[in-house]
Image (cartoon, rainbow, N blue to C red):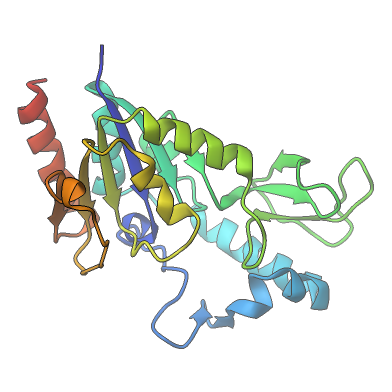
Length: 238
């Protein structure tokens, strides 16, 4: 039976493919837009066309972006382990790299949803335009969880279940600042190995028990994941 891996990913994984992180710098701008204008429901109510155009551009740009080595190493781990990826990213680069079990906590850029009923979700590879409606005659919007909106709790439950069953957890490319998603890696058993792959320092406030099983690899996603993969294959003799 394969050991179970939970891999919790953030913007740092996709950054190596040229996808900017959500907040670039300290000015609160994303692709030169104010976050409150394009990533809140208030922004949507104020100017739907502006929001649609913003995400249409992001969706179009995604077609020219390719998975990087970090995505590919994560995908390759499925050859040795039972892998569940829980990601805060809205791109499809994990899937395009070959990963088969990906839980998107914050939505997906290549999907749309009803403004009236968020459970009505549709595949969306092209632009969403004013007048595009769901079967309940409500305007379609990006399938993105904006600031101030609740996460899909069915996805949270799936992620928590994977965490509780994990033998190893790898946190990669995230500063662990976004709640409640940042609690998921610590829903793992106390004796679960946890690798944190990120060049930066984060204060985790670990219990003494957890400290024995926690390893910080101060590398980028790609080089760090190569090191983690080699170590896991050695530990579990795959």
